[in-house]
Image 1 (cartoon, one colour):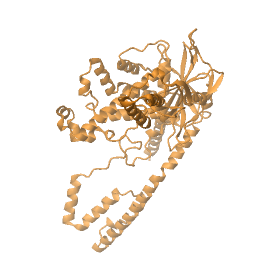
Image 2 (spheres, rainbow, N blue to C red):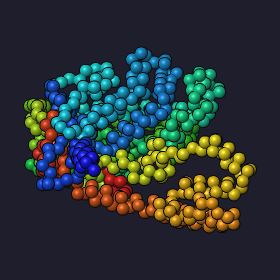
Image 3 (tube, helix red, strand yellow):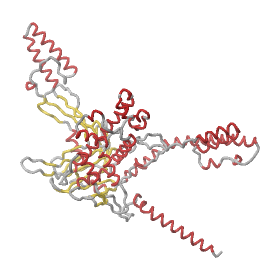
Image 4 (cartoon, rainbow, N blue to C red):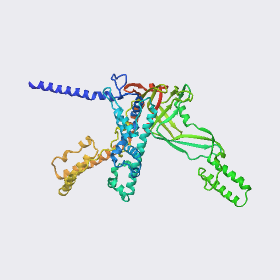
Length: 588
C-alpha cells in the first residue's frame, strides 16, 4: 500500500512529460502548416529568404517566384527522377558528338547531364522549407552551376529580371530536349536491336537485357517543359486570299508592350500581340506567279513557232504551281525580276497553338528614344486573378500564382516577388492504390507482398497430407488477403479454432468460406465504387480550399511579409512580370 501513491505519481509525471513532448515536437508544425486565420494566429510565419550580397535582387525575385509554381516543381522532380532511373549511360555524347570540337562537345555534355535542372531543383526545395524561425540561404550554388553551364560570369551590376528568367528558362528547355533526344535514341536502339552496331552493343548492354531499366518514360509520351508554349503566325494576301504555310515559334516568356497612356489593362496588352496586323507593300508568292503567267500570256500571243510552244509549256507549269503550291516555283521557268512583282496588302494573325502549363508574362515598360536616354513607362496596368486565354473553341483559364514588381527608374531600382500561399496538392497521395507508372500524374501503388517459396512448399505438403487442413489454410490466407473490416473478421465463428467433430468443422469451414467470399465480394465492389467516387469530394474540397486561399508572401531578398490578393492586384504601377498557372480539368 505505501508504494501505490508513488506509482500513481510516477505515472502522472510520465504522462505530463509525454504531453509536453508532443506539444513541443508537433506544436510548431501544426501552427505553421495549419490553415489558421490571420486574426486568430499571433505567430510570426514566413518562408526562406535569400541573401543579397551585391545587386542580386533580380536573381532573388525570379527564384522566389519560381519556387511558388507547383507545375515547375513537379517537372523538376520527375525529370531528375527519370534521369536517375535511366542512368548516366543514357545521357552521354553519341558518336556524332565525339567528332565535334572540344567546346561544342563540352556544351553538349552539360546539356545531357542537366546541370542547371539539378541545381534549380535543389535551390527551390530549400526555398520551399517551412522554417520555425527566420532563415536565409544563398543562391550561390545555383549561380555557380549557371555560370559553369555557359562558361561565363554573371555580372552583379543592375540587371533585368526578365533577361535572367529568359536565360534560365531557355537553358532548362534545352536540357529537357537534349535529354528527350537521348532517350529517343536509346529507344530506337532497343527497338531495332543493337546487333548491327558493335559500338552500340558495347555501350548499351543493360538496355538489351532489360529495357525497362531505362525507365518507362522512354516508351511513354512526355508532358514537356511547363513554361514552353508555341505561337503560330499566319499571313493572308487580301488580293488573292492565299495563305502560305504558317510559321511556328516556341516561347518560354510572352513579352507584351505596355501602351503609352496613363492606365491600361492586361487584355489591352494582349490585343497588341494577338490582334490582326495589316502590312503594306508585301510581295505575295501566288500573285508573283500569276504576274509571271500574265506576262507569258501576253508574250505568247505575239510569238510563233517553237517560242510559242515553249511559252505555253511554261504557262502550264505556272498554272500547275499556282493550283498546287505557289510557294514552290516551277523548275525550268524563268520568272520576272522580283522588283517588278506586284505589292499587296496582307493581314497577319498570331495565336497560341500550344498552351504552356505556366504562362510567364513580361510587361515591357521600356521607352526607347534615339534622341535621348531610355525611360520607363509608368502606366498603371490592371490584371485579373483568373486569366482566360484563347478563342471560343480553344479557351484556357489560368490562375495567378506569382508576380515580380520593380520600383525605380529604367536604369536602376529594386525587384520584389510575390508568391501565393498554396498547398501543393500533387505531392500528396490521396489515391495510393490506383494503377499508374513512375511518371504518371497519379501516384504509384504500393508494392504487393511477395510469396515466399517456403509457404508454397508448406501448402503443397499440407494438401498431400490432409485435404481438410489445406482448405482451412487457404481459407485463412484468403481472409488475410481480402479487404475485410474488423467487424467482418470478428463475425467468423470461433468453432474453427476449438476441437469439435469432423462434420461440424466441415460445415463451419464451408459456411465461413461462403461468408468470407460474400463479404469480400461486397467489400471489393464498395471499394471500386468508392475509388471512383472519392475523387470528386476530394477535388471539390481542394477546389474550395484553393478558392479561399487569399494569402500571399511579399518577399524582398531576406525580408518576408504577408499580404492579401487585393494587395497584389493593387500593384498596378509596379507590376513587371506575371506568372499564371493553367487550371486543370478538375479545378474548373
